[in-house]
Amino acid sequence: MLRIGLLGCGRIGQVHARSIRALDGAQVVAVSDAMPQAAQALAAETGAEARDTAAILTAADVDAVVIGTPTDTHFDLIQGAARAGKAIFCEKPIDMSVDNIRACIAVVRGADVPFMTGFNRRFDPNFAALRARLRAGDIGAVELVTITSRDPAPPPLAYIERSGGLFRDMMIHDFDMARFLMAEEFTTLHAVGSALVDPDIGAAGDVDTAAVILTTGSGRICQISNSRRAAYGYDQRIEVHGARGMLRAENQLETTVEIATEAGFRCDPAQHFFLERYEAAYLAEMRAFLAVARGQAAPEPDITDGLRAQIMADAAAQSLATGLPVALEAG
Image 1 (tube, rainbow, N blue to C red):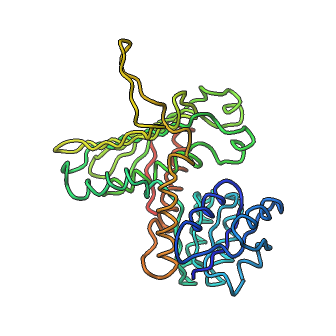
Image 2: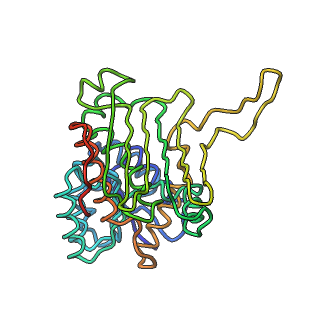
Image 3: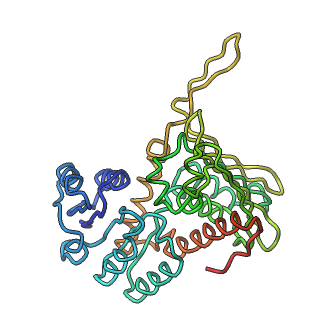
């Protein structure tokens, strides 16, 4: 039985706890949170013990840790878990600083522990199938990738102020997806953005509407668009154009029922937000981590994927500030 210590009992911690409970051969044995009542509640739900975070990191009865705490805590938690010999799963972003991520990489490699970065969208059945068909050559060489990601509504302003900005908090998923799909690293990035949804987001120094163009050394292109508002639900679509055709993954709707009347055709809205849309992806992601923690598979995405996405997010912020394309440094 693989014994898991869960750090962070908020929304994403609860998602991971439910996934672990649904999988065979693993259990959450300890949980921690800065809010003691949150830890107690999740402990009661999972049958785990609420403990101090430091105690979980060094506990003999914990084989692996799942880190779902705020980003500014990741640096210390990763290093503590690595030095204690634990397998590590950490939500994105690993850290807001690429230098800190590189420092974590050195500690993780020095400790020789497996590390998996939480980019759950790689595990979405539709996106994974699309990528498999790309790799099988169904549409020939990839020429243009288009990724659309729009939230139903912006998060609270307090969240915006500590999130690191749209590129580091929201679009970082799309940067990883772009790399996941394109069998070639990107070399240049050009970003534009505005605060069109909520002027308070602009006053806080962020944007809520953005687009990025990425290019590879051979000239292949990816375009990403993000918005903090979509009146019709959580908008998550991918289209890949290739030499011999196109692959497309559409939104998941609340139901597949469609009504046709004299007024036309009408279907249900897209699923409301990420908890519903990516429920299957979170389960598959945790299943993959458990295999990693048991030594049955190599971690993918790993810690260097987290670094690369952060480099791209930083470059997007720089491009937005300067209005100029940015050459992407190597990971």
